[in-house]
Image (tube, one colour):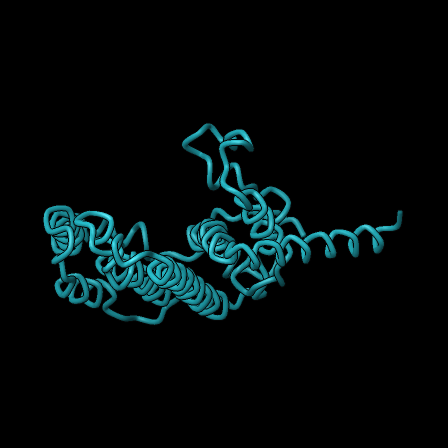
Length: 251
């Protein structure tokens, strides 16, 4: 069988599995898994640890099952379509078009790489939250009135969203700080520490008051204490070598 035939066969298989997942409401599983895989790659890209061959080495096991020693549980333990969703998401991420934030893809144009990284990080998080809210709305619509009146599960289902607004803001502002720190590292001076500190000061800890307030205070301290600020700058105010150089060393 030729490579083209094998690819066409693979694509037909993927399309069939995608249709089965959509018919069973599995599109949310795919989107959530896609987000977790893509987020893992984007985090490595910003940290400067993404390898040029990441598409060949990315695995569901390493990203989603690290707490289980990098092993999937037995198939019998997975819900219907669970592994299909994971495999589909992995295939989509691994075969996606090359992005400017990948190693040397922007040919040394660090600003282009950083902008692409920030834009996709936000887009992927938006898609993840949309999928979660969509699934939540479907779950609520399918629940009986009696279930919705129960004190524990019903109270939970009556919430407009399963997402924690505090953690959503925390994640978005952290991405914003990493972006602005990258601009500073590239020579575009800005007070990203001050921006981040002002954002954190506005975080609403109403939900899980104790845990949220503790996290808020910890981040504020890291952006106020002089020694902690130095450590924050050392950690965040830098750019990967593969964003600032056109070619891999030795090429």
